[in-house]
Length: 288
Image 1 (cartoon, rainbow, N blue to C red):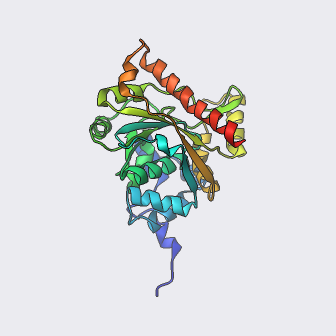
Image 2 (tube, rainbow, N blue to C red; image 1 turned 90 degrees about the vertical axis):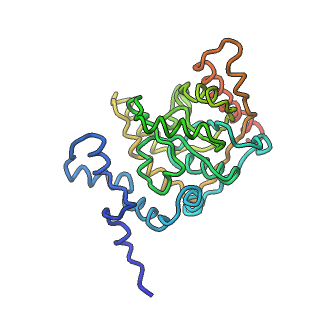
Image 3 (cartoon, rainbow, N blue to C red; image 1 turned 180 degrees about the vertical axis):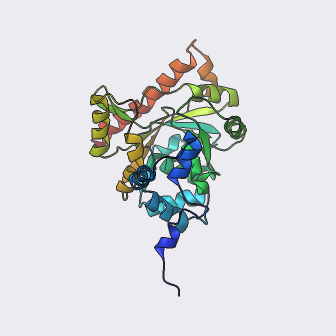
């Protein structure tokens, strides 16, 4: 039998390979210096990510998600699964504490429960080809959507497939002295109404390393406009191997109720965000 040669599974010429230099060139329209690219490749664990992509690249969608959960040896489970609706034709919205494994875990759990899933993610993650059947890409940076992204999302909303999202748009940071999301964007409320989908609030119990939040404090101290923590998210993913996570399920919110009481979509978004965090408070009371 031919010996396993890891080097050939890290070639950037492979069709599944992540090439950060190419991605940034497409997004920025210019080439960065090679030393900068090499540094970014190390920071984002490009070699490790490509290794995983090649070993499981024959899989796609929910099968690839299942392989990732096994690869990272995750212990994940629902809390109050009896609250999950029989039909998955809902919007499942959650806090976003991790920035990586929380999306992988939730997408996997919903796919296992309902047989399929679509998850709204940053368009940068759409470069992970094995997950393109699951991902619905959006542009979280500029607030403008490409036409094909809008069409993909609208088509998915009209199906019976469960759709998950992180309405904060970016992962949790330390705000007002505690780990929490930014205010949730109201888009999911409008989507629920237009597609007549109930909303299921979730709370993902987890956190990144102290190092990650130290960088966030440093950014604020130095008044940096860009967030260097974004580049550390792949490192957090590989640090979390073998972690235990729980997802707390809230009571489904009928889409019709989102039209009542004169509340605006933004009011509803923050109300549902508060429900998510109340789920965590109730969970902590019973689990110490």
